[in-house]
Image 1 (cartoon, rainbow, N blue to C red):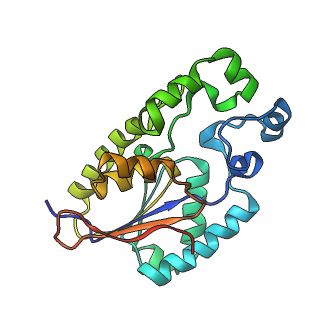
Image 2: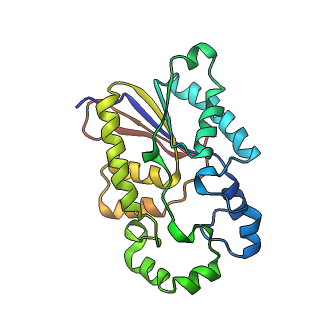
Length: 229
């Protein structure tokens, strides 16, 4: 099977939830939750700083990789808007050459019922959650009503197969989310379990870039990994 020439994965820039929760996954207090405004995950916008990050990243992506054939985003507002601001760095003529596609397979991991809950509420309604998490680890632990990272990996595999089938020899940029990109890296690099586990525990900064070049070998070359320009 022919492969794309280049695959570039970008984690979206700083979002409102990233800023207000300072990287956390569960609200510490009701005050913090009210500050966020209970925005659904797919509607969370970029911050003004995130918009500037996206514009600067667009310049870098054009400089490092040239004109992409395909630009894919998850459809989540922060990913969609990041794609828009990255696009600004290209001329109108260059933009006409780039096909922009929304693909829900590259969405963020679903964190389930705990998404809007405070730490106290999680401990009250899911008292065994931390025990479950400790036992299953970051790859197989499932937040109530949500996805494990291995579930994300399943749809990441489906997504990659579609890219390989539909876009041979193309240069592709995917604006996605941290957990999805972790899954992609584990699949593409065929990481053994221990290394995949280490990958799952790594922080993924906003606007970080991971890129792979395909040159006929079974495992493509990772030329940039988790790098913030």
